[in-house]
Length: 48
Length: 380
Image 1 (cartoon, rainbow over the protein chains, first blue to last red):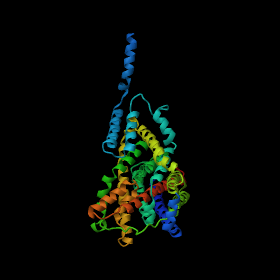
Image 2 (cartoon, chains in turn orange, blue; image 1 turned 90 degrees about the vertical axis):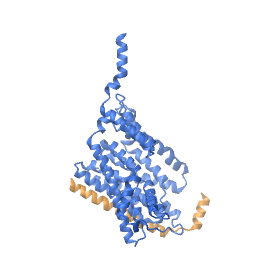
Image 3 (cartoon, chains in turn red, purple; image 1 turned 45 degrees about the vertical axis):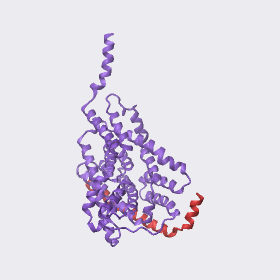
């Protein structure tokens, strides 16, 4: 059971870290794809 | 006539004669929780209904957790089927601003490191003789996230629900006492004094804020499908908030729905604290391991912060690693206060908020991965 536990703990830690690292890369990508433009944001605010 | 009077009087005293020492202790515990919530202001929204629920369930002969008891109905209605934690997550998502995290996405990694205590505590619980599912439920206290802990425990170890929930919420409220000594011990004075830069102008567009919850849902839920109810509801709440087109639903999620569910959830958890079931050495061990989980989370978060500080050549203050444990927004405030103890002009709050929201995603992701792995090995 401890061996099973070690596997779960290892997969859990590495899996959480890798998933969040992947999200980091995706967010960086999204920020490049849709950069902040003050004009657009002001228009959006005006509309809402 | 005399007999009727005696029978009537004895009916009124039957409660008193049926009360056990365990009931009395748990009524005292309930009063203690009420004291912490009302007088000390520790998580009152949860501790007040939990404390009162604990008193109610220990009233002899009232049988509120019996098959037809009121608290049993609340429990079956929303805890046993995991509906309440998910509903609360919509509200949390609607209240969370991920902008500080999106400004500096790298600090999302601190949200992962801040969950390692879950897994370390899980291993310690296994070594102490708990079975796999109980150990997972104990470790998840380290998620520092009440609904996540309740979700996992009600699935795997409902008999530990009372202890795990009380540990999760009371330790969350004690974060300002638990974290600072660990943060001070693990960081040098030079590291504590690091000032982190703030972007000169905003760098996150509305489109990115809108796409973020959708992308997180798709990516995380595909990787760990068993966490979809939690992650999905958290991100739905955030999408509603960011879209701005469903203001009524957003408002209801963060107010009416969250309030009603919090009340019923608290009462249901209190209902699991029947003295005849709750009072055993195992409960004390669960409470101790819960504290250990939060300490280990803080240790791993700060150590990972130190690693990021080293890799970024001193641009990241390792103190913000402590906010990676979730416990939003308490942990971020602790970081800000600690940072200002050494430099009154050091403003770490927004960076800590980023790590803190990263911790929220990290805690749900950690739980989702555990659920999915357990399912994979045939235990979920």
